[in-house]
Length: 380
Image (cartoon, rainbow, N blue to C red; front, side):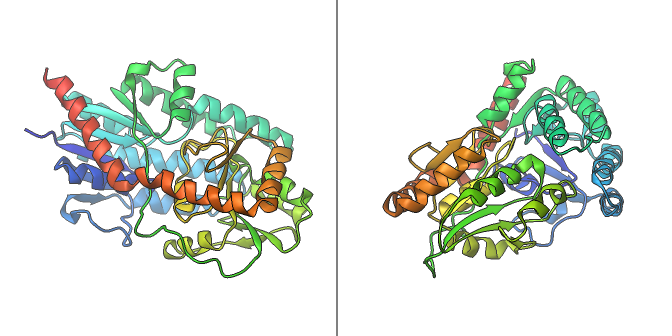
């Protein structure tokens, strides 16, 4: 008999893909979430439970000024969601939840005999918080102390859950280095939609460097801005796509006039934006995966990532991998790609071909296989 899987996530992340994967194997018993996105398709809505109040609370708190507001919104919103989700967590065989959103629910599920899995999409929280503490200090900012409370709950969840599912080798490595038993770690490679992201004709000869994601210190955008400002490339531009976070406002003013900002881009428009780029850069200090990497690569452009980005590319074949916090290395690689258009095109083609193995369909198969293995181990 197939196990009944309950998935719980207060946010978007890749939760819908996770739920669709469980459903594809006939495992999905219930998908608990906050506000169900009307843009998501392919899920049996009769299996969806919405818990709206925590999402409204988080939105109200995060709208307040300052980084502390966002940190507090995570803390109170996630904990309220977790507390309310408990009533729906007790009748499954596998309870799979996103970190900081399932400790109370996990305990209910375990009392009923369920296998518990916590999903971690970033580096081990100790590694992540130490990096950010250092980066905030570089810009004269105080790292919000409330993040310590989030950190501590993460660690308790890792200790009590049966398994920790991670999205990349980078995350797995930071977990093991922090003392997490390797036998608790299950890696599942995230993906992209090949029907949406594919090559298209570039309509101009501008050397366009593109970044997509939250504009924040954690994403390393400050180093990309430093790198691009060093370049002397005619007909070039840097496009930053995404919301500006409070800490992003600390470094952006120094680069006024050096970039074009696109605050919001509908998902259906992202492929067109990638297609008009010459290179995509994700310079994160830590990024557990970075789905935008495979989306951009699938559109046939070369990629530059740091060594702390989980989405893998082949250094020198699909683009380049550089150290974190290294604006000089970023500038050198951008210059190389500008000065070598044939190699740039070849790298883009190689990147496109390489990522075809990492579709959401492949992710679903891998996820279902892991569920089967985990369940069979319990049955033996």
